[in-house]
Length: 415
Image (cartoon, rainbow, N blue to C red; front, top):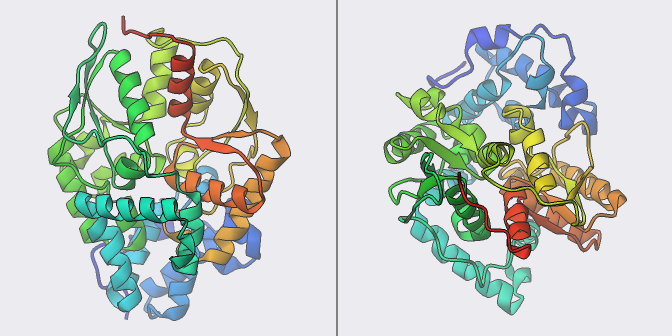
C-alpha cells in the first residue's frame, strides 16, 4: 500500500531533495542521535519509499514522529525542498492508515477541543485551581512539566474576544487580532500588551468572536481536514481587516501558509503579520517610542517558526532594545528548544534533552530575564529553567516593551 489521501507528499517535492546532506548539521534530532533516519534527508527517503509501494507501518511512524517540524533544514536546503509541507502530508497519511485510540485522543484535543472556547475556559479554570491548591502532582507524569511551565492563571485578565478598540492618534487602518486557543486564556497579558500597542500605533483593533484556533497543531499532527476547516473559519472571520496580527509565532507561521489550506487562503495569508513585525515597524516610524537603555539584560530565544519559517530575527531585538533592555544572544544557530507543539508529550526524552540544553544556554548568560515570542517555547523554557533551579522570568517581547513604557509613564500616541 502507498498513499491513500489527497494530502500525501507530492512527488515533485520529494524529488527536489538532491541528498546533499547540507541539512544534517541543522537538524536537532540528527545532532542528538546521529541517525540518518532522524534527519530530513532520511525522512524524505522514507517518504519516497512509501510512494514507491512500501507500507505505512510502525517504523515509518517512528521516523516521522521523531521530527520536531522546526524547519531549520529549509533554511539551508539548496533545493528549496518544502519539508514542512511534506511532513504534514506524511503525518496525514499516518492518521489515515494507522488509526488507534492514541491518535483518536490526539485528534480530539488538537483538532476538536482547541476549537471550543468554552472548553479551554473550563480547563483553564481547573488548572488555575490546581495551581492555587498546589495539586500538580495529581496530573499525569508527562503533563507535569507542561504545567510547571505555565503562568499563574488565577488572576488572568478578561478575554478580549468580541471586543473592538479604537485607534489613538492618526488612524492607519483596522487590525484583526487572532485570539488563538490557549493564548486567549493562558497568555492574556500578551493580548493586553498587543492591543495597547496597536491602538497607540494608530490601528483600530477588533477581536472577532467567530474566529477559531489557527489549526497549526492539527496540521502538524496529521489532521489535515480539520486544519482546512479551521482555516476556512478564520478566513471568514478575519478576512475583512486590513491586517491580521498574530502574537504566537507558530500561529503566524501557519496562517501565512493558508493558501495551502483553504480556497481563498492566499488573500488572508497576505494580510497576516506577526506582532513583532508590526510593532517593530511602528517603533522605526516613530509611532511608538524608544527608551534609553536602563533596564536589565534579556536573553533572546528565537522560536523556530519565527526564525526558520518566517525569517524574523531582528524585529524582536529592536523591540527589546526600544524597551531599554540590553539583548544577550544565547544560541546563534537557533536550535530548537524541543517544545514543538505536543512533541514534549509524545517524545519526552528528545524534547527534554533539547529543553535542558536551552536552559543551560540561558544559565550561562546569567540573565534573569528571557524573551520568547511563542507560547510553547515559553512553557518549555520555564519548565527546564525550573528544573535547573534557575529563577528567571520568561515573557513575550511586546509584553516586556509595553511594561517598560508603563513603568516609565510614557504615553505613546499615533501620529
